[in-house]
Length: 144
Length: 298
Image (cartoon, rainbow over all chains, first blue to last red; front, side, top):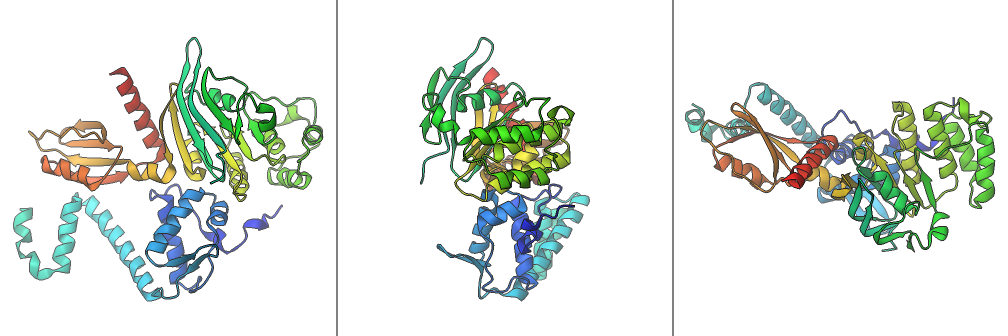
C-alpha cells in the first residue's frame, strides 16, 4: 500500500465537507480558530502559505485567501509581507473558545427556532428579551 | 502582474446550427478556472479554439502570451490538452505511450511519471485496451501531466468517473497548483468538482458566457429567500430577483445580488422573510441558466 507522505503534516488535518452547507472559507476559518483556541497553534506559530494550505486541503487558492483575510480582520492571525502569516501574539484564547461556544449555542437556537416556525425576526426578538429582561415587557403584545 | 495564461476577447465562431458569441475569458497564472455548462453549450469548441484545433471567425485569442492560432506551435509546447476524443493506441501499453511522449517532449519528468503511476494505481505494462474508462482517463492525464506544461486545458476530465477516480484526479490537479506559475482550465458538468477546486468560475450556455466571476463572489451573491406572503400583499419587482415561485402563503425568491436591502424591500411590502438560504453552486448554475434563457426568449 503506497503511503502518501506529502500530506501527512499538521495542516492537512483541516477538512472540508460538502455536506456542510456553510461556505468552504467559513469551514477553514472555524478549524483554524479551533486550532488556535485549543493551543495546537500557539501565538507566533507560522501558518502554512495560502497556496500550501489550498493544495493540502484540496480547495482553491481564492477560498483560503478569503479565510486568511477574515482571520486577519478578526486579529486571529497577522500577515507580514514576504514573511508569511502567523498566529497573533495577543489572541485571547479564552475569548476564542467563548466565541466558539456562543456560535454553537446560536446554531442550536436557530435550529429549534426553525422547528417552532419562528421567523428570524422573532428569534432575534426572543434573544433581545433574554439579554435585556427589563426591556422585554412589551414583547408579548407584539407577538399576540 | 505577469501575462495572463488565457485571454480571449470578442471571440466568435459560427456553425450552421450553433454559434459561439462574444466569448471573453481571462485566466491568471496560478489559478484554476472551472468552465461549466450543459451539453452543447460550447465548452469543447471554446477549448478547441484555445488549442487552435478550431480557428475563430473573429476576436483575439492569446494563450500564454501567444496569439492563436498564429503562434500555436510555440504555445503548444507549454500546453497540456486532454479531451474525450483523444485516443490512445489500444494495442500498445501505457509504458510504450510514456516512452513515446517522452521522446517528443524534452521536459518529460520521468520521476513524476513514476509517482503518478503509483498514485493512479496504474500498471505501465498493461495494454490500453484492457483498461477501464477511469484508468484510461488517468493514463491520458498522466501523459499530459508528466510533461509539466504551464497550462492545462482539460475538457471534462472527470465526466463518467467513479468517485474514487474523480478524487484521484482532482487531487493531482490541486497538486499542480503548488507551483504558482501554472494554470488550469477544466470544463465540467459536475458543479461539485468545480466548486471545490476552482478560483474562477465561468458559466456557459447556448454559446454565450452567462456569468463569470471568482468563486467566492459567486456563492456570496446568490441567495434564496423563504417568504411568508399574506393575502393581498404584492411582492415588489426588484432587479436582483431572478425568480419567484409561490404556493399559498409561501413564496421562494431567488436573488442574484443579495444585500440586506433586498430582504428589507420584501418586509416593507408586507411579506415576512422566514429564512435567507445560501445556494450551492449547482443551484446557482441552474437558476442562472434558467433566468438567462428566459431573458433571451422575452
